[in-house]
Length: 368
Image (cartoon, rainbow, N blue to C red; front, side):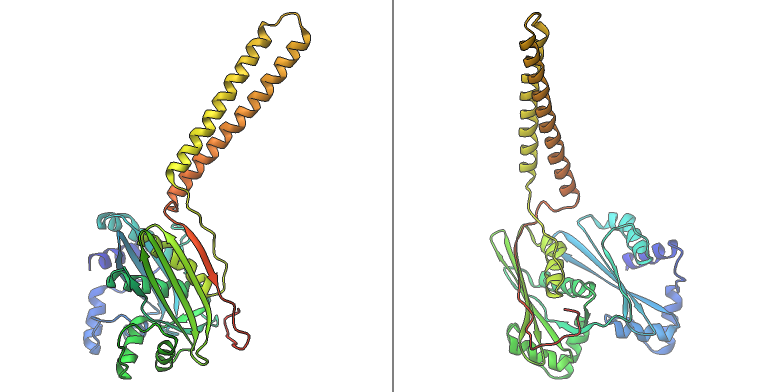
């Protein structure tokens, strides 16, 4: 409730939205006989938006995965019921810092300002998307609460690709409950995914798993065509790091793979390797600087032999140039270490991403 109140204040400050006061909203909902508590689906927010007479509604969630607090905010167009903008913020800061700094950044991004870089995705509401639903990721060596957060992030990342109209988890669960679907055990077989997809009325289903072995996380996901029961695309990634890395980076890569988009290559460069490489290069630069200095001293001390003078001068130039190259390399490695640290990529190591080709007999309106 504190985060919500603070976020409303920050939205008002960006001076783009005409916000309805919470007291007025609650009064109208009470008068209309609508209850806001437990409203977690976009359809529910659309109903409230129409009742109170606004053009757009904001809905959001706060999840905790490992040390990361993940905040997702979606902007819904009341007239069409479509999500027109989605933003995700991940931070390991304390709630005090989130209140003081990050909620303001989040509000600016929703308003369309470029403050956080790549965290906001906005799409044309008329763009054709394929209906898709995501079952909760199964976890091996991962806590239930964390797999729930990972599943919600996978839904957001799939939506952010621009290829899918993703059904919300609460809406899917409500339909399955109404249909009397009883899920015994883990539903990750193709037949189970097809059955769920037919019940909720989507053409594609996504199932996946996260397995922890030592300090390695193996993430696997696949898309199944509900009409044919065939697996039409798979993506896997092995990540050496922690669960926060899976949340912040790997699920985006897996989602882009499932959507048929290019995946940005990521490599792991440990801090000690960067520092060590920079020190070695700087040491070699110092060594050739010393050689250049020795040649220069010989050049200055030689008074008569013109051939030796020319030789020492050439050696000085060559050795100095080599030393400059090593110094430059050390600077580049050190700068790369700083860049990677700032972008939090030091813990990430995607060892493989496997992409299965589309089946020629299956046609999808996704631009594959």
